[in-house]
View 1 (tube, one colour):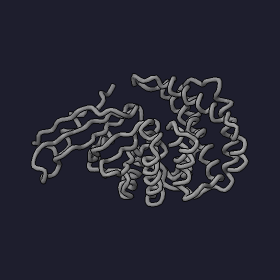
View 2: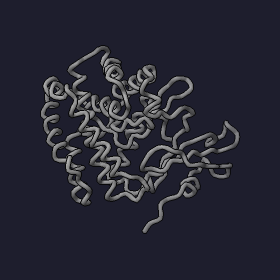
View 3: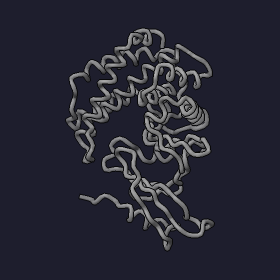
View 4: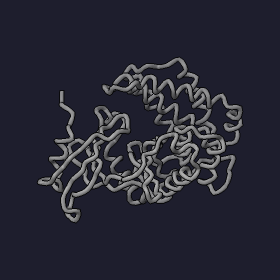
Length: 308
């Protein structure tokens, strides 16, 4: 069995850091990758001096992620100004180094209840939706079907609620064939920990592993379902994005909250079968399923299907 690559191994392969005082420490956040804060001391005018984030992909992540696509999408998002630039890509291993962003990593409760921060999130989303172009597409419902095939191949757990959720997904897919928006560059994994608020007020977005050209309202719905937002806050997100309240697009955003939980619940069950990480993926997936059930029980659910 191949030993996982170490931070020391990667650091030793970066020419800009050779002969310098290099220290590193583990960074929290994220479920599947290993992240390190690297501090390189020396003359600040010299190349390679400063603070950086080194990311080493987790074992088994290649099952879900095309790293070449991710790197291309990261570069496009950096050109749009919403994510820090790639400074080094270390092969083999697809390890990356980016500048360290001094700021506050967001959490669900540091975004919910803070309308000013929600406005910054939406502004950042609009920026990469409008300015970035990714080479790959993420067709959400095809991807759900692919994940189902993967789950079957690895004999992943299949909770009894799955068939009912898939029936709802078929209804949502049929409804969303009407008035489809143009695909834009989407992040598709807008957990709070992927947002960093810098001291100057800029909201940065990191981790483009699941990015692709897709329905922009999936990004909005995915963001909303990841955060304990009130109805008024969700309407604020939609209004800020559209420039005014649009009930038609609001319905699309709401339905994509369910699509996101279906996607990530299947992902979690695959991980529960395959991953060696010390993380309860089954419980994570079941929480997603319970939230799907709750959102599908919303009194407006049928109206969303009619008006999307």
